[in-house]
Image 1 (cartoon, rainbow, N blue to C red):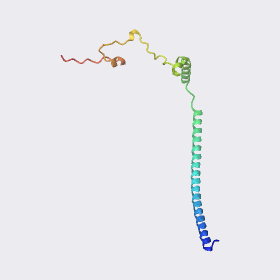
Image 2 (tube, rainbow, N blue to C red; image 1 turned 45 degrees about the vertical axis):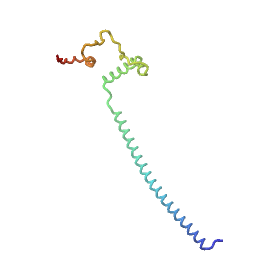
Image 3 (tube, one colour; image 1 turned 60 degrees about the horizontal axis):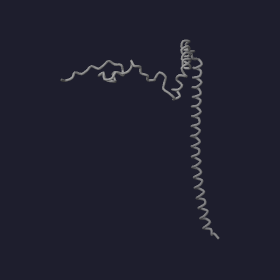
Image 4 (cartoon, one colour; image 1 turned 60 degrees about the vertical axis):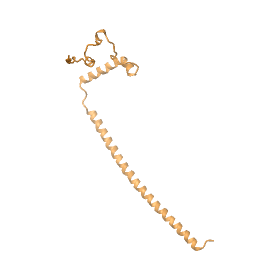
Length: 140
């Protein structure tokens, strides 16, 4: 069937392919080793970061526990503020829910508050409550 030269040639081809595969496996193994080393380094760095963050949180918790209590006047103001908020919430609720205008921001003009028209004073001056601008003399 096969003569020795053909078998020898096939054997050489097989050995060549085997050597090539072994080389590829070695390269793959080296890549995996490098990747594993990188992951190990990253894991250690993450553990150190987490330990540092936990330490920072513990320090902050300790500081908050040791913090001086608020002055009684501040506590009174805070209590009054929240009581006022609860009292005025029904009035503000439609505005906060987007169903109406803000309380106190309705434009109801009384007759005494109407703008006078054609007063010769620029409109922007009237709006800001500023004194009228001096008039420029007209050329005759």
